[in-house]
Length: 182
Image 1 (cartoon, one colour):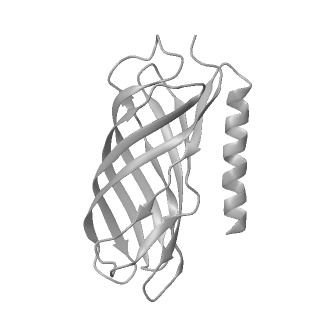
Image 2: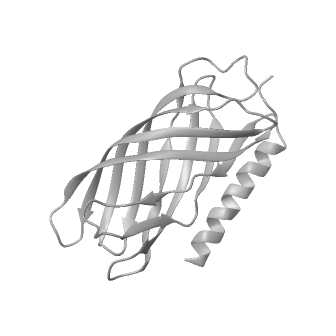
């Protein structure tokens, strides 16, 4: 587990350092998250202990966002590491970002999440859409607000598989690294 955490941090550091030294930009921040599944008892929840978010531009209207997922389960009978995986989002901005040093404004994009839940013994595939707003950058700092809506498929090891409704507010705080668009 420590190896996985160190590898993730090394990968993020390497990517952001390479962008900071070139004519590219990258958003590096945090996106705190708490998950409460419909079948959890009162007071049970999961907290993402690696709330890192990395966003890279891939066009004048589109970015690529990736978030590692490592949830710690609190409450209930079992406590400990529950989920490991990742989420990706492709924010597509409503207006072109050619004139802006950093992207901002309204966006919507598809969401894909993949993970493994060790406490409930299932693989999770999440498909959703995330509409949101990226605030205009002030001195490289920015905030993004979004809302994910969709579904998650739980492929259980020993129980029948099922779909559950997926939703959740998403708030990211962070800084743009590298050079802005010229």
